[in-house]
Length: 32
Length: 167
Image 1 (spheres, each protein chain N blue to C red):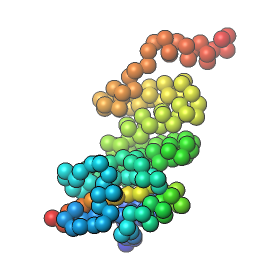
Image 2 (image 1 turned 180 degrees about the horizontal axis):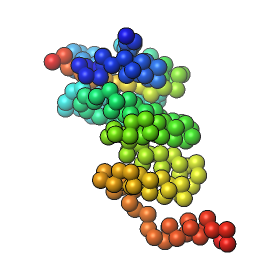
Image 3 (image 1 turned 90 degrees about the vertical axis):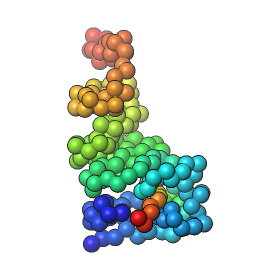
């Protein structure tokens, strides 16, 4: 099954999004 | 993502292909948490926030969605993203895909509304009226149809006059 590759820092993720012209998805979750 | 959407292979593949994704456990300290969240708060989780590459917010929503609803929502976000790049033809393709591929999703009428906005940028006022009429016919009970019910008669008459060969 394909899995989402989660980035761990905001600034590099924004840079990647800019370069690839992709939106950034921020997912705020709780374990319970 | 979470117990409902994340295990779906189609969702995972689409997110991986079209988005850059970052997750935050709200119970843990993360150095970028405040900056990522912006001025909002996490009143309930999951909360999904979509940004463009400059960090401007495109959209946010709260709660789990079933895969088809989520896939429609993601197409809506991609359309909005293309709007920010002023690529209205690409935006229109995503909005039409959201509404056409997932006509029963809650995102579908909104996608038609935004498709009218993209259509306006491409083809002018007659196009937005045509698309809003289509939205109102297909989803008459939605708030998006009510938002599209704002075209005065004189505007319709003007469009008809301009479309008429006799002028």
